[in-house]
Image (cartoon, rainbow, N blue to C red; front, side, top):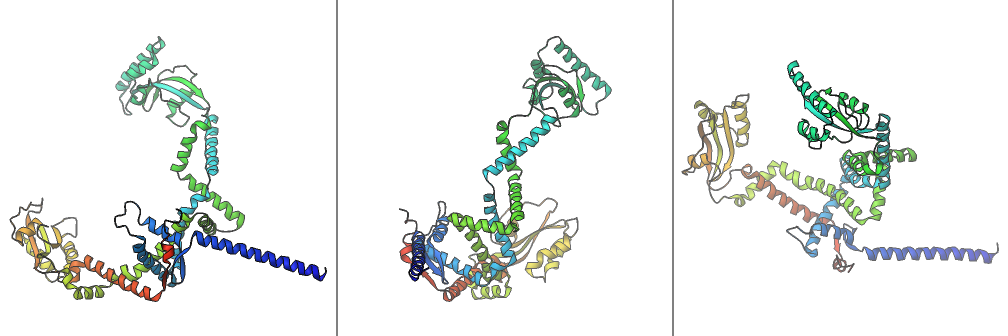
Length: 488
């Protein structure tokens, strides 16, 4: 090859490379224009479509506290900051997280492993197996019957009476009586009697042996002699006989059967196992790959899977920093209550104690003595062990912090109200024990639910403030302005 030709080849390769680069750049620009970055959180880009998905979902019809785009930005940024903190803490590598996330992801992806053709093929397989069994056993028969019931432990005299009646009906039929009319008048099978005795199509194994053998032995139009079964005495008319029904007439019912019995999942499992065998991989890897492909094709699927992924991380990191921490840190709760005691003052007195009902007058004092020096939160356990620790319940107790109007007995005995107390059956003696709190709770346990909620709110604010300092956030206002407007 000459130097000239070599130069030409090198130029062509370079030109081709430049053209491909330009095409790639144009595609990247187009993609960016289609879904531009709306913000960066901790240096990570967030697409407009992700923000739109979250914003629209949380501000749909029926949502009471709707936000403007600008108001929602702060909530969304806080959410992304917490997710980033979870990622930095490597919570996404924990086995518990991976298992739970895979479980949810697979719920969305597994249905994509099955096609309408797969279901149709399974429906035909089910049909063909059933058809073979039914036709090999003699096909279908459509009998009508007249039944006179006979209880299982009937005496010989009772059976003789029923037998005489069925023989009489049979004699009428032999003399030309109308089967349908006689069934309507005399049959004790209400379901078929109204239809002239017709019990529709049956196959072998669907009814009792005695009835089945007699029905299958008849020719079309033939009437049997009285036949005894566990239900009583039957006279059977064979109306029709045929092979199994055609597929098209049963297809809808077979599809319903597939859905009701979870057979779709069985089909999916079989397909997954086939791929595992062919490719030497695992179900988990197949479903993960399928999820990537689905996310690349469908933005809704991508956002849904990401939402659950990030939601799991958010839950775990929030539990560590706020929810679980606040609920279990007794010392901090007590300290928070002490600093903020004025928040929990009451506008009226409360009674902290119990209203109780006993059978024996001696138990009135016994109850008080048993809990006199016990912490309030332990009263219920002490009372249970002392008075109701076996099958005999000696007392009935209502424990709590009561305001006026909460309990008639406490209103009467502690708040001086003229109330009517309805006696409790089997526990005629009423009593109360405890103290009046005039201004507010004694300790945080008295308002524990409120204190936990308030302390969690404080921890949340402090945590978010720290995250805002730690991670840079940039919001592109020009892109935010195009949310839900770029297709117009």
